[in-house]
Length: 201
Image (tube, rainbow, N blue to C red; front, side, top):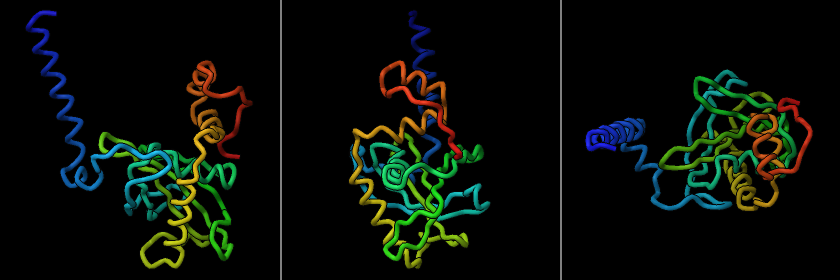
């Protein structure tokens, strides 16, 4: 490679780096970048956020578990403890996936609750998140909700109880989300062969 080509390469790398970092404000980086490695079966802190949910056609409060080792921790926690999801959504505008569990018994008073899980990853953090709403569509994680603290504590406990050796969630997820990637994983020996699975049962 000539000196000129090396200079061009360095300039391209600088441009790409600056473009990538400009997506995140200083406030965002200070808020989420703990400077610590992501945690296995745990998280650094909790944050509130709000996302538009196609299923309800409105925003819901999402609790984010920041600094998790995987964006899938909330989804896997629900799958491992409450079986297969009811519906899967992909919002192209937000480039975000939502996995819905309908009428889950997860509270002490055994009130049926709908749970949505999601996740997000960028150079500064990995976040696994969830939302909850009742049969009338009321946001159960909004400030002041009588279920907020109980639901957060329950999800945190499920994340910390995660069994990394149980790969069933990932098998079901990738088989339905992207069969092509799933076939590659099968060939690499990551999963045992499994019949096709409908993501929206």
